[in-house]
Length: 198
Image 1 (cartoon, rainbow, N blue to C red):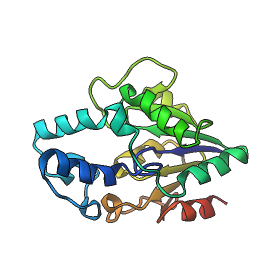
Image 2 (image 1 turned 135 degrees about the vertical axis):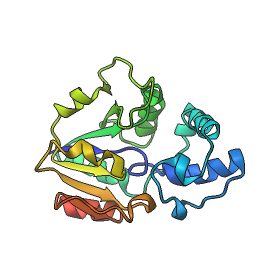
Image 3 (image 1 turned 30 degrees about the vertical axis):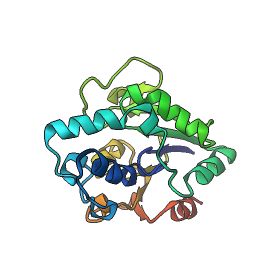
Image 4 (image 1 turned 45 degrees about the vertical axis):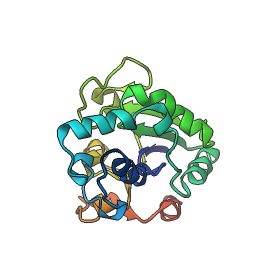
C-alpha cells in the first residue's frame, strides 16, 4: 500500500509546542486543549505582525528539531515500512524547512520514510524546485491507499482518490468538523490507526 502521513500533529506534537512558544514570545496563554482552529493566528488571536514573527521563529532549525514525537507514530510507521508498505510524509511546511524536517525524521528512526513538501495552504514563496518539493499538479498524480491527516483544510487533497481511507487524527481543532463520507475515520491515536489499517 501507499500511505500518506502528515507531519505536524500526526508524527510530532507541533501544536503542544506552539502553546508554550506563543506564551514565551507574547505572553499569550492558550492551552493546547483550547486550540479550536487549525489557523494558528485565529487560535491564538494574534495580530498579523505577531503571526508572521511567530512563524519565522517557529521554522528555525533548532525549533523544528525540538518537537516531541507523537506517541506511537514512529513504531507504527516503521512497522508499515517493514511490512513492505510505502510511507510518504507529505508536509505543508515550506521547502526551507525540508532539511531540519528530514533530520528530525532521521533522528527519530524514520530514515526510510520519504518526505515531501506540498504547498497545502497557498503560502507565498513556498516553492523551490526539488524532487522533494511538490506542486499541486505533481501531487495529484500520486496515488495513496491510506492517509493520516489532522487538518480539515487538507482533506481536499483526497478528493481525487475515491477509494482512499483517511485516518483523521483526533485533535481539538477538528473535533467539531463533520467528516465528509465513509472514507474518513476519526482516530484517537496511533494505536487506533494501526488497528484500523490492519
